[in-house]
Picture 1 (tube, helix red, strand yellow):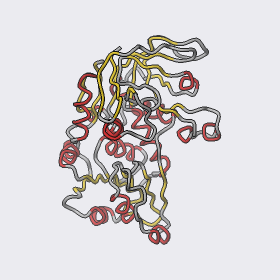
Picture 2 (cartoon, helix red, strand yellow):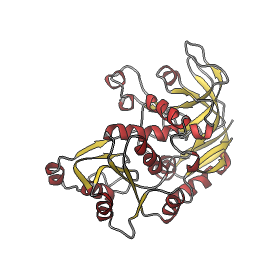
Picture 3 (cartoon, one colour):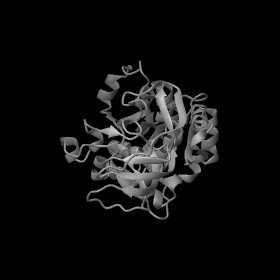
Picture 4 (cartoon, one colour):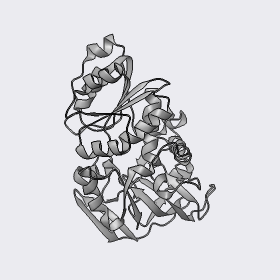
Length: 344
């Protein structure tokens, strides 16, 4: 089969590899759509702590089942499915308590297992057994379904930050995840949702889709601008990896406000200074959010199928597998929002 294989830093080749063998309990997919995540470009340029090379990247994916291995499961050849890429063990305290994304034995499609930038992909037996395969509603396209995983990550962050009716939510970053967070926050009951961005291309896109509140941080002080709009933020979500936004986010929070550390920071910026006294006196809450669960992927598919989020407007490019590196370049240059590989 044809696949995009990453063998080393910035060493990616579209090549022929053996098609995966469908083992006992596993499921073999024909890929129909696989979206480019910013993490994919990061792995291409600089690797990742969980990446095992050589590897076929791609973890935001949807496809059609073409073979099922022996075993007791609910899937049939021809099923349209989306896959939650995190494969938990199913038996540790975190898995048992309903937070399998914290599983110490977690392995990830596109990181530890070959992913979706290929014609075919195997979902290992433990992924099948632990509910990582989700049926796609008939009303939902493969392209839209491939974005269930990033939406599920947003669901995880917003559940942890406890957005409630009437909250003011501020989101740093008007990339694809920022827009998913924006729409999801309204679903969760937020009264005002404010986007903050410094990229001209992303500012232009946000204006195109008629974002209610948009702050250009190259022109206005974000903290002062937020306070002018609404007095302060109840929830802040940094949907970008800029280390400076964390301190700004804390500063703009109202008393008892919440900030969720949604994005990891670049190497060397792990220990950033923050105002501990402000956290203390204002009783602020800081929470981390990493990945998502299979259940949150199912929630995402239901939201998408109900057309509660305009995900199609975020898909600005559909490309072939052979155009993958060009897709990475477009993402890095902010010249695209969501790019989905649809031709393999």
